[in-house]
Image: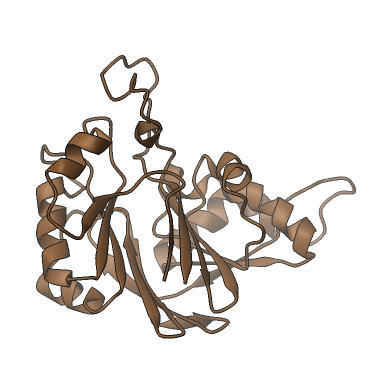
Length: 257
């Protein structure tokens, strides 16, 4: 299993437009954060989790060769508005690409990307070919077993995902307010866990660094990573305060196991 962090930032990205804080002005490339998204290679499949607003740049920068399926955590703009750029992979692969999401998110996707559902577009019109699929129980993409796990994130119908292939496993939850005991239990035993950690101050729909670290201790993955971080968090300073086995992610970070 191999994964690349395509983006590790919150909805506005880092640097933030019009901000001159230390993190937004930082020369450390690890503090430059595109909107959160993940590329996973497992069991011969190439998967994207969330198609962020920065997807085209991410795909070019980190050389995503193909997309066999897209998993959507929820339908907020920073997680879906890159779907239009998936159309290039339709051309490369000469095939429609399935997009898996909760029933609520699929309703939103069908409304927002209604133009992608037209059977016969006018000549010369270049549109994505997407097959929206509602999921609420474990499913397969090739040999990859995927379990959608509902998590609280404001009013959004939001999933985290557990992926398993060839004896390897990954948990990914970029947007989440809290994790109860049952949810923690469903992620326990993964090799790598990636979890929301917006900032130190409390937020109404996201976990703080302390809340995320507490949940990660209970999940007890071999390695754990914080993601979906805002400009309150400097990479190096945040890493210094983390326990062993928990790391600050950054755009382009690649893991193989």
